[in-house]
Every structure is written in C-alpha cells, then in structure tokens.
Image (cartoon, rainbow, N blue to C red; front, top):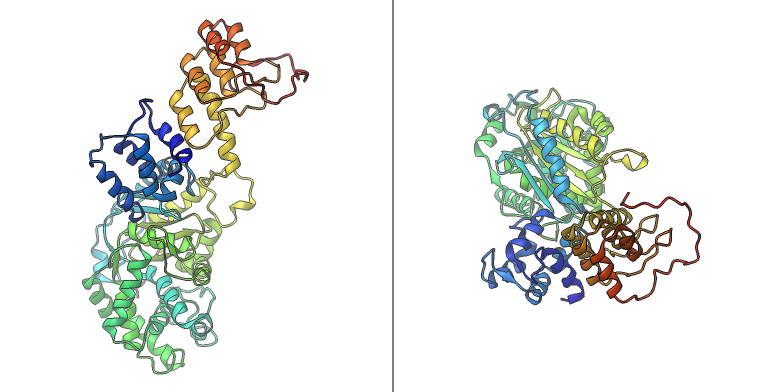
Length: 529
Ligand code: GLU
C-alpha cells in the first residue's frame, strides 16, 4: 500500500502520537463506519490482524498498518476516510436508535389471526436492520429473531420469474396496476390476469413461473439458494408449522388459483397445486431482519449483494420490481405510503417490511402487530418517522427542506471539515485535527475571513496545536483579510511561547493572497465563527 495513503490514516488512529496503533483501534474505527466484524469482505484483513497476534491491545507499527490496510482493500481505506455512502454512519445509527426507542412504545395493531401460527407469536418483538450499498450495517432490537417472510417473498418470486422468463412473458400473465383491493381479493383485471405481482394472485402466478420443469423439491431448493445469495448468507430457515398452517387454511388462495386456471391466466400445463405449494413454502421461509436488510440492500444496489459483491439480479429486473413495490407493495395502503413515505417497500402479514432507498440503503423491519391494512404498525410508524428525519422520500430532492441528508456530498464534507479544523484549532483539540488530516483534509484551508487553523491556535495560545500544525507543514504566514499573520496574532495576544515557535519556524512564503489587499472591515475576529 502506498504510504502516502496509509500514513495519514495511521496518524489519525494514533491518538497518543506514539507511532503505534492497536488492532482494537482499527476494529473500533471500522465498527464506527458501520462495517461489522463478520463482514465477508474483511476476511483478509481479519487474517492479517490474526497474524499480528490476535491480541486487541497488540501494538501495530506504521509499516504493518500499511499492509493491513492493503488487506482490507479500498473498503477499509474508504471507511477510515469517511467516504462510504453514509460517511458518518455512527451519527446516522444514533438517529435510528432514537427513532427505534420512540416507536417501540407504539402498541397499536393486532396479530394476524387468519393463519393460526401467526396468531401465536410474541407481539412485543420489534427489530430494525439497515444495510447500505457499501455494506454498512446496523441491527436494532430483535434483529436476530427469525420470522416467516410471508408476502415479503413476492418481490423475490417476481424477480426470479423476470430473470427466468423475461418481462414480456411474465406480463402476459400478470398486470402492473395497483388493484385497489385486498391482497387476497378474489378478483382479476379486465384481461383476466392478476392485477400485479405484489398481491396473492400475482405471487401464485410468479411461483408458477419458477422452474415449472423441475420436481418440487428442486424448485424449492433453487428458491432457497436464491434467497441465500440475495441475503448474503447461508440457506434461510423454514417454518414447517407455518407452512402447514397456511396450506390448511388457504381456501382463498386455492379459490384464486382455480379462478385463474378457469380463465386461462396461467401458462399452459401449469400445475396449480404445485404453484400454490411453492407460494406457501416461499411465504414460510424464515429470515431475520439482518438478512432481510441485506436483500433490501441488494435491491438498493441494483441487484448486487453489498456484503458479498455477487450480482444476483440484473439492474433492469430490480428497477421493474422496485416500480411494482412502489405502487403496490403495501397492500391497500400503497398509494398513501407512496405519498407519505415515498420508498419502494413490501410488507407481509407476519409484520415484516423491507424498504429501499435506491443507491443508498435497504431497511428491514419486523414487529408482528399489523394494522387494518395488514402492514406492521410499528414498521410503518418507523418508516414515517425515518422520512420525517432524513430526505429518503423519492421526491425529497425537489424540496429545499430541513431534513437531514446522511449521504454527505464532497463539498459539504469539505466545508464542514474546514469549519471543524478551525474550531478544533481554537480549542487546541489535536486529535480532531489528526482525524481531519486522515480524511485528506488540508489544514491550510481558511474561512471566509481568511482565518486558518494556525491563526486560531495562535491567538488562543494552544502551543501543542501550533506545534502540530507546523509539523504538518501548514503555511506559516497566511494572511487573513485584515492582513494579519498567526505570529502577529500571538504577539498581540501575548503568547510568548507561540511567538517563539512561529518566529523560529522558517517562512515558506505566503498563501498567495494579495498582500496589498485592503481590509474589508476594521472589525477583526479573534475566534472561530
Ligand atoms: N401466505 C399469506 C397468504 O397467502 C401471505 C399473505 C401476506 O403476507 O400478504 O395469505
């Protein structure tokens, strides 16, 4: 690894300035950036750390650090320089924790009762997981608890059908319009087809298109494999009791399949009983929100699973599916949800929801009490609060709103970093200055008055900060807009040691500002704005 890259990052981690960091320093910086210990992309880095003795307190020098950074490829470097899609992930995570605690007190809704097994789950459970397109992850509440995915399997079945058969063929057998009716309504569109892939009729149709040539066991195996790859992990669970419970109480779904067969909606030779079985099995697949968030993130990432980097669906399959989720994914609340929340999402009667902010993140929520539409009451409440806080609604980019944007843009990072550097210098906060250096920020940048970190450290009498800035090779005689240098500031404030330090350090020229420029005002600030 190029030491020009690794050195500043090393210095930022080396808070004590002793020329050494520990494995713990590295791990905690990665955790702050949202990269988990079990991230598959970090396995080489973990091996490299293990080579160093696997002792979290073991000292790692700059050369070894450069090798470790190399093992983490650009991911670790980007994480440490706050260049992942959500640069300040720990701040974002803190907001989500607050929303989670707030929504937890919401006990509205009831357990789904029409599938007996669903009526028996512990209603208080609540989980939220996030995975960004860079694989930054957060898990809150019961994120390790398995639940049956129910209708949140429909986007997967639909994408599977699109990939196998192509969009034209698939849409010869289902429409693309919201039905405006209940998810299991005994109703087809004017062409005698399911209204869309997100209601039960559409789910059964997608299931019928999934490898109909194979024996049932293989059809399910392939689906389980697809879900494993999409969710970046091992084979998903399966709740056999739910499966039987579903099948034994599925009069409406049987009726729907018979109706569709009667009007010729299925491809020729479809075995509707097998299609139904596969649909029930897909609804009975068990995941945690952690895994479901990886699926949502794969959708957000145009079909590539972020933690593994494996392409699972083409980008056009994902685009088509997100369009359907956006208009039809939240039962009869879909229109209102698109208006108020503005994210493609799909829910299931188990209280699962997954939602997508394209190119940013996927989020999975689970809480078993559902509202009158069939959507998790807490899930919807959380997503509403989420878009009140962050500009994640599809059309938020049109507004000049006060909402937070966690995907900070480069200029914003630069502006904030300049402000932070000046502020840190005025407080003598050397570790913050080191952090900014690691992110590639120049400590020479001045504010609109031409005040640099060196001016502020000098006028406030912070000897250590002045020494640190000089050691970083900053410009020693920058002129502010009143044509004052840090030395003049230190002299005027009577900070003798700083005067000595600055006088001793050799001038390497001025900042390129015109020396003869007239001051714009007589007012001369002493401190950072
Ligand atoms: N398996 C459920 C059913 O067929 C799916 C319902 C849902 O989650 O929307 O009723």
